[in-house]
Image (cartoon, rainbow, N blue to C red; front, side, top):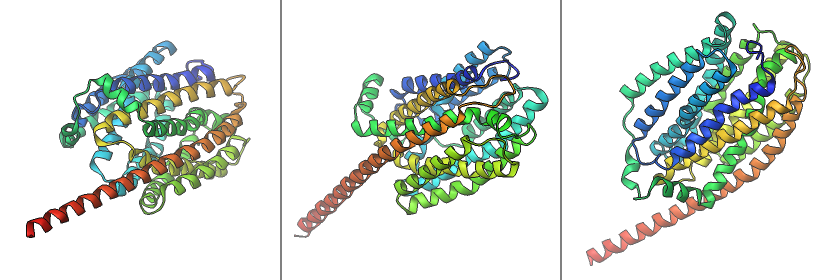
Length: 390
């Protein structure tokens, strides 16, 4: 913000431009997401993400940055949905909580390594450096995916002969799918409102220095490396909705406390960030595991693409709205109305509790139908065997 001399509203748009383009890309991809090897689809979009990120690292003006962010979003926004489709294809429902918890450790690792390294690079070589770093690291990961990952093609044997548009409309038309879409979209709003302004709030309102800021993110990230596997295991052992509800109530309380803080001792800021991040992660694992159980395999790629798109679009709207809610009179003034975002997050969280309860009901109904079908198959097999013996 200081380097490009931009206001909070402009910064919010820089964040949301990625989200909007990612959302549009996901919707366009949804129609044919189930018609290709998921590995090949992943590599196509991951390559585009690397190119877009590199462009972010070489632009010098705000308009060019927006353009580079849009390019990055067009490709990067689909990566998460393809990854979730792969996980859902490979791992059964009873193991999915642990797998998603392990996967989300990557988010914790980004807190431990990505943000502090990014801030360090930005402090010494300018704000372009973190983008270059991400592009280089992503290129290394792309090589690993290409050489080590096996093709994911089981879903191709179950495809219907529908056009991409017909496939998309078929998925969107299902009521139970729309419940999952809405729940996921709303879950992202609070985070997208708060997180883009987290660094500015810590420095200008809480009194954290530029050198202390990486430590805040690093400690919070380390805590997620402990919390995520634990939440994942709990999600596979206990009622996922109850875990989600407890985490949502916890996060709502912490959001209100944190966004109303003034200048605060450094150690308290660290503790509160750990508690806040625990709430965020505590919601993410059970909700992702629950929503992943809604779609059938032939429609899983399309479902995940639409789900990710709506999440990105909702997040983009949230970041843009947050940029208009938050006010900063000068470059070094405290952020004003940041606590309003905390209250908005509480209200939205209450709605997600209702929607995720409906997701839970859908899953229980599907589980009951699957058991009935299994019992029917067993009875039919027994009848066939008895007739054969007779």
